[in-house]
Amino acid sequence: MLNFHDLLPYTGQFVMGLLTTVELTLLSTVIGLMFGAALAASRQYGPGWLVAFVAIYVELIRNTPFIVQLFFVFFGLPAFGIKLSAWEAGLLALILNLAAYSTEIIRSGLAATPIGQWEAGKVLGLSFSQTFFRVVLTPAIEKIYPALTSQCIIVMLGSAVLSQISVQDLTYAANLVQSRNFRSFESYLVTAALYLLLAIAMRKVFDLIGQRLFSYRSST
Image: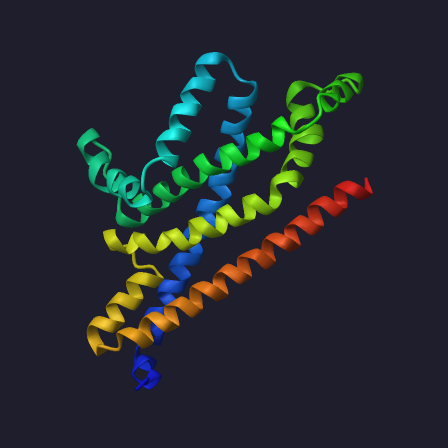
């Protein structure tokens, strides 16, 4: 029989875990998307050696499990003299993962942008960087915005494996609570509901940002 009353003493653990998940998601989304945009531009317009380097990075990340990438960052990098805390390793793994996937998504938007956008920038006397950010990147992002939103939510949900290296996120809180009161079903049911609410909230935030960004663009 379900008994959620036994979870009440552990409300603090769930709240702290949720805040850690939100913090890691926010940071990894902002940094990962910026990194992904830079890599997408490099792969689309860069010299051959840079295109090849970015392609290898993207294929390496997209064709290996996230948990293996996480273990490599946390357990492998110390072999090269780089020792990170569990939180730092988790954040880095999330950034690297999101950057690789967003690179391909953003690059598809750049590839679909008409060449006339570049010519329009030249006619207006804009530099390469000004044309890229003002004339090319924004309409490219608008084209792939739904896919980019979904990828960010997938990365948030994938952050659940960070508990494997003792990052005290939402899943870590659920594991801790069920190990103490043996209410496994109730603990993971509450955790699933919190992840669902977080995913819905993320989509709402992305929708609001998209409406503001693209409606502003269309009105100018």
